[in-house]
Length: 415
Image 1 (cartoon, rainbow, N blue to C red):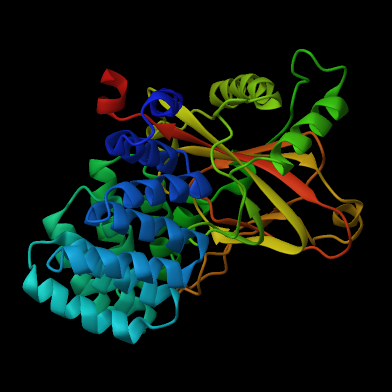
Image 2: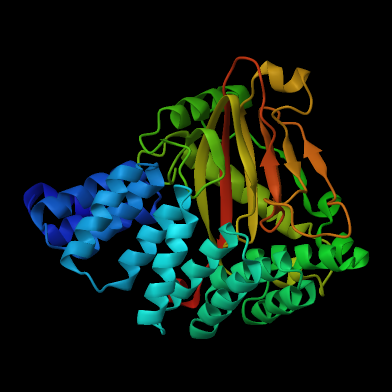
């Protein structure tokens, strides 16, 4: 990102430079920056359909439905036969509550492009929104056949099968994918849901052992700060003013609150100290994991990994819906600022592990663990554990820093 910004100072009309900057900002989840960069590409190259398409995706993430629709329409005008534009427009329809329109468009698209996996997957997800779970599973099964390494297709198929009442097949799909990607959080979450649907209490207890795998750690004061309170004040101030903050981005769980892009960009400020303290805490968690060689979470421990770190700012009514972090191995949250109301009105504002994001068929109730947020507390947990924050009332701002430890791929290690 810094390299492209530097190059563009001397060559402000270099469309390739703006295009690569947009992609770099997108990888950092800087939605406002990504939108601005793609808008610059479109201004310099108005017939670049891919730029219009990517601009539409970024605008959709911001919740700008009209702007996204206009960008996708411009992309389609230039490239009327590109299936990815149809898929993105259909995704926009689903998010706007028009799943029936999305199904019609994607049925036609998948018929015209039978080997384009995203069209079949998009159709599957749209059919799920319509409650047509058997049809959704069929479409997602086709997508997975075309692209067997795609985790989104595999996990989506497993979830659709669960909703269709085929828990045993849902488990089989999840376990097959775990053979390809041991420890994958999305597949582990799907397998846990399938075991609940099958009434396999022992497997559920083993997979969702919150008491064993959720760790509460008091973060050590980073160097340069008198105490943890001084550090928390600096960290909260830094996050609350971060230029990437976006209200309730559509692909994240944050509702009625602000969600930042990567905090690992300059100027890092107190985040640099946080990262060092976090490395120490994760290393300690790593060393103290139980000796359970056959547990899929332990089996999936990566040989190399990297951090994603972002901030969440919530006020009255703000919360995060139940979710997992499907691409990570270990996740966590650190509390830099906690309103008094959260401590006095339990469990409002607390972190809760247990319930999934929708009512899947189940023969058992999910195990629930609640953790009270306290300033200076770091909570670590397996990325496949469903978790949410309970909305809180009263005044004050709740500022937390979340992170993922993401397994590095072979390509990333070579780079």
